Length: 170
Image (cartoon, one colour):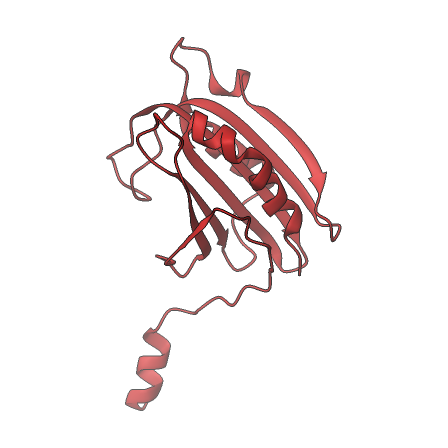
């Protein structure tokens, strides 16, 4: 095997997503930090909030688990200050994008306790947060949209989040 073939075999497969979208006014494009991330945006914080909202669009090459498994995982990234299960306060809805793609959305507030990095024992502890997420079903497999941030900031950007999701198309 030549050195070129060895190097090519050692390099990770780069995913080339086919999805297109419209970026809402006011969002700030951020550098993508992983080959599994299609796009990343900061949604500027509102007065009184300590940080911006963060939206990431993911694609795992047609993989990524079932819609329900993803909803359950995202809901599990939030805890409730009154001890209730987050699944009891989360709302799940469905819709179609303007191009006809099926979307399942979840919306849940509480304390954000996701792993800081996948597989890490270290977790966030961010009370007063809100998580909005979507699974978008495409012919190439699912795309995943995840938005987290302080609840007031996410409320400000909720309509533009929905517009972004509706704009997703092949």
